[in-house]
Amino acid sequence: MGNTKVIAAVYGPREVQNRSQQINDQVLVRCEYSMANFSTGDRIRKPKGDRRSTEISLVIRQTMEACIMTHLMPRSQIDIFVQVLQADGGTRSACINAATLALAEAGIPMRDLVTSCSAGYLCTTPLLDLNYVEDNAGGPDVTVGILAKMDKVTLLQMDAKLPMDIFENVMQLAIEGCKAIAHYIRDVMSHLLSFYVLITPSVI
Amino acid sequence: MKEIPLQLSLSQTQRSRLRAALEKLQDLASKSTASVTVADTIPVNHEDGILKGHGTSEFNEEVVATVCGVVERVNKLVYVRTLRARYIPEVGDIIVGRVLEIAPKRWRLEINFSQDAVLMLSSMNLPDGIQRRRTAVDELNMRSIFEENDVVCAEVRGFQHDGSLQLQARSQKYGKLERGQLLSVPSYLVKRRKQHFHHLEKYGVDLILGCNGFIWVGEHVEPKDNEMVEDHQKQEEFTPLETRQHICRIANSIRLLSALGFNLSADKIVETAEASMFSNIAIKDILGAEFCVETAETELKRRVSKRRS
Image 1 (spheres, each protein chain N blue to C red):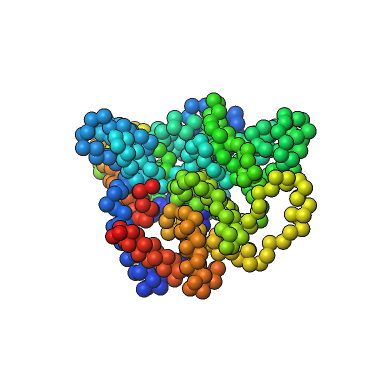
Image 2 (spheres, each protein chain N blue to C red; image 1 turned 60 degrees about the vertical axis):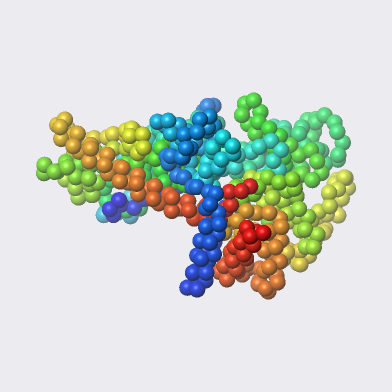
């Protein structure tokens, strides 16, 4: 999304590492978000578990848990690792989109594709997918995550106050952005899939 | 144990040949396959009494895919076969796995499933071949049978009521695998067949196609009744260079076939290995660009002729 670059890795479903965390009727989803030192303009060495990344890890984990069909893989765990290589605003939505793609590619059953997009409101204009400069201008920033087909919201975050009617406009814009991303992800997926399907005959 | 993606440096002509071959193969296959991604609707023509299988769910009275893969239909059952998912065990499958840890009375094996598999001491034959109760001494000597990181061949026994997967190795053909290579391929490439153990007599090589996508290529060993007696002699034996080369050649053929995404069967593997020998291709060049293109073209010819006949 813009200049933001993110990599995502999914491991699992695999045996639960910490036996005490095992859940008997569903899968344990874990998520780790980190930012590379070189990802921002000034090189800052951040401690690994700072508040911001723990919060985003939690947000991504909850969003993904909503779409993974957790009851199908009991007593196992799925690890999602997302790392920001280049940050230019909207990292958390980029991470969610990358994680969805990685999960779908790993063959993990999901209810629907989750896509996320941020929107803001600056100088009386609603803006879609804020970049770093727009983000730092201090205006309100709404991050929305939706299940594209079911039209359900799984994530909604806003850091500032906005009047009701403007909020609705901004939210609508973000949802449209999400749908555009869903469309794009679907394209990428079917392209990937056609490569795999290519040769394997269906006849057993 | 990781899958090895093939990094090909194709020349211009090779690339176009490979693409042409793969596209033709796709044309041949696409008449019966439809691929779906997550949340795609699967058309069912509003037949009533459709059974929804794995990888599907219902939304707004439509059948919707929950995984990426290929739609398969068996009579009224509709399911989606995933291409890149974990192995799903079925009772009686022959699998190859690696020992992760030794727990009380059991070994834990990694078998590419969402959990570790369990091989109980009581569900395998003792090395001396005597049927008796397992004692505490046997339990202490478990490391003399399998150690950590050993490669083991076993059979799926079933799921325990607590959901864990149990294995058994009650025959001479199961057990520890030594002197060979373990390959990991996507599990959908290995189909369930009558025969998973193959002894390629010409090469003195054993080939075990594990249903979980782990494939063992190793030196041929005769199943012995009394392994304990033979143990000391075995240590001194030496795998001849020729056999090692055969192992590598066959292993590389499997790598190539899996990278191209062809189903793996013993016949096809041997065929590929022989083709490479016939055209004087060095073992390391099996994974090279030229032979890769040739294999794809051969497979295309084979399928075209099969379709005509």
